[in-house]
Length: 382
Ligand SMILES: *Cc1c(COP(=O)(O)O)cnc(C)c1O
Image (cartoon, rainbow, N blue to C red):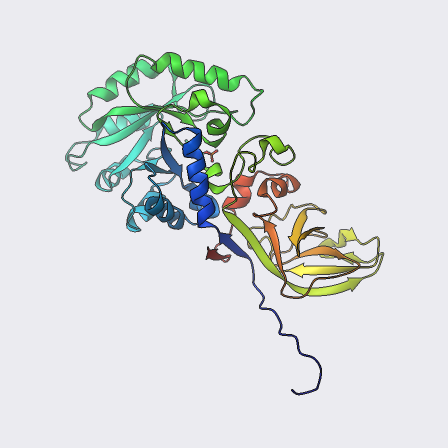
């Protein structure tokens, strides 16, 4: 009551916030189950659960689903899960990088992939005493054509026989391979890889695993005993063309985005036709308009290479990103009739604005955008 002017309560401003929708995660898990009811699920949690929080996602799945195992890329990730009380099997998807890690694997009841001779020798040569007389579960990885990790197909029989005999190994093994082109149904590579895998392993009773998210969605013949979903668990389409082909979209696949990235408008300003905005003055307005400044930037993980025109969702409409992405801020063109106020919340990706589309505008893939989320981003689990 100080000056007689009408007071409107100012909205609280939120800086970059990742809203994590736990129900969406569980629904995506159930959708994977529907696609392959006979297969077990190893949920892939590497890179901080694709930016969603390593232990948060592990606990949600462990508590609310029958998830069969977790997969990570680094020993440290596995140890964080154990420290958080996760008791499910955990698989190191690239195995150990150092023989001294084997006792740590044994004592923490981790499982390892073996993909080359060095890893095989380290396991077979380890003294049982050093492994506390524990037998380690092994996933034997065969290179069927990706030519990254995996033993050559010609060496498979030799590895298989040798590993069976080791006192350090808990049999049966799991036999696995990784597909290079599963996101593209028109590419023949997947058919060749699956045929080779089948030929090498069809006489063997050991459980088998081939399918990442794309294969789960597009190649039912790859499902076998163990699925290894990463991206689709987080509600993102793993298929090529997901950014502009409805048939390949997450919605069509029955997936819901788990992360919605948001931040508030922190300032509004008028610019005239011919005035430029931001570092390098690399965008110049063609009209008189209102520019909105939003509290998110590359310091939060929003991609610096997002181009002019990258969509941002605010007050129910899409507006274009204009000017360069800064460390802590981005600028958008709200248009002449600004209906927006300081404090209004913009969505950068997630519900209502698929990250697949943003990735396209930033010349990258959804995987990279998600796992680039920085630690200063607030997390709000709903
Ligand atoms: C990362 C990874 C996956 C998961 O891949 P998505 O495409 O995210 O489903 C599966 N298997 C292995 C071996 C991986 O490294």
